[in-house]
Length: 265
Ligand SMILES: CC(C)(COP(=O)(O)OP(=O)(O)OC[C@H]1O[C@@H](n2cnc3c(N)ncnc32)[C@H](O)[C@@H]1OP(=O)(O)O)[C@@H](O)C(=O)NCCC(=O)NCCS
Image (cartoon, rainbow, N blue to C red; front, side):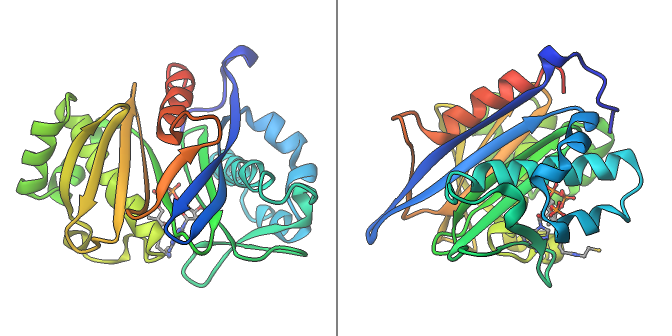
């Protein structure tokens, strides 16, 4: 990961609420994306991390590990703060569960979860009710990953991506990877399962990128897009409508944020 060496004007932090509309009602969620210098994340860590989270920072000495932990927790707290408006960020925790999945806990917290991802100096988080599982993945293009991405994308998926996406091969492969990793987070298994299980079954162009369904998890739908060298995917149950608070679709908002954060990432 490159050191955070941009100018202040290049740093970026946004958050926004969203709604999850299902047949049984409307649920609240929120999202956040940041790209902040490590010095700022460190300086504000006391306001963001709970004591239990801060304890997990003490064994992360490398700047890269500190940055991803602090940026990820900050994105999670910024998103969760929309759903816990009366709590201070340091009063609740995002701690790893037994599968390393992030688990939200603390006084007054119930039915709340978060999914998060970091790459380079960027971090993204989606806070959501436990009732509506979500997964997110954010990746930066890196030519040395090409062989692995090729190996992990089936011939059918690659053909789908070629038809549906106006992207070069590296970005098509990365987008497929992101969709599958985001699905694995929604399922809480992470990439511990055979990649074939997470296969993308359909891929259709959508206003900001692409919309996907999965061969073995028909309950879920994925949204993914690339901006510059970055790719982001989010997965949620396909029966749920993911709507922005102000009428703009969350995917469109996230794509705009990523576009704004991308050039200097
Ligand atoms: C989840 C996983 C795909 C993330 O990979 P990655 O591309 O390196 O990292 P990302 O930045 O996109 O995502 C990391 C976040 O995923 C989340 N995560 C980790 N395991 C998860 C799981 N089982 N389910 C859902 N989310 C998970 C965490 O919040 C983590 O961030 P944090 O450690 O700061 O809390 C990968 O770590 C994995 O497969 N983990 C499975 C669990 C595992 O094998 N644990 C032992 C590791 S030796």
